[in-house]
Amino acid sequence: MRRKKVPDHPYNTDIIFLCGTRDEMNRYLRRQSGDPKEEFISLGTYGHYTHFEPKDARELHQHYVCVNTDLCKTAADRRTVMAHELVHCVFRIFDYKGVPTKADNDESFAYFFEWLFKHGQKVVA
Image 1 (cartoon, rainbow, N blue to C red):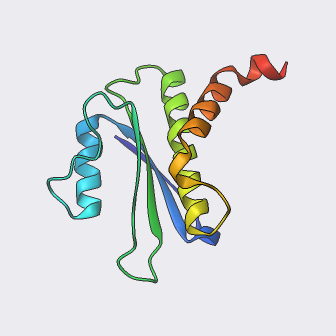
Image 2 (image 1 turned 90 degrees about the horizontal axis):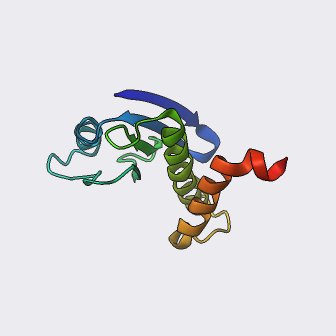
Image 3 (image 1 turned 120 degrees about the horizontal axis):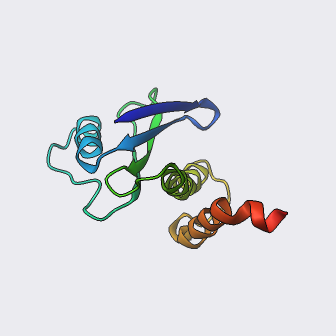
C-alpha cells in the first residue's frame, strides 16, 4: 500500500492519500481510528473518503482519500477515483471551516468532477 500525506495547515488538516488493496487500507484505517472491527471500505467499493476528529485540540484533522487497487486496475481508473474521493474530502474540509457548501449533497458534484477529470481535455479543446 502506498501512502502520501499532504499537510494543509491553514485548514488545520492533513490529507492522506491511500492507494492499496481493500484489506491493507482497512487495516491501516483501523489502527488510525482505534476501532479494530470497523469496516471502512466495503466489498465492491472503488474508493472511499473518511476522516477522524482530533483527540486533542492541538492535533490536526486527519482526512483519508482511499483508492482500492483490487478494483481500480489502471492508472486512469485510480486517478478518476482519487479525484472523486478528493471532492468529498474538500467539501468536508470547507464545511468544517464554514465555507458555504452543502456537505450532505456533494455526490453530484463529485460525479461531475470525475466526469470532467476523464473528459475535460476533449471538452476544453
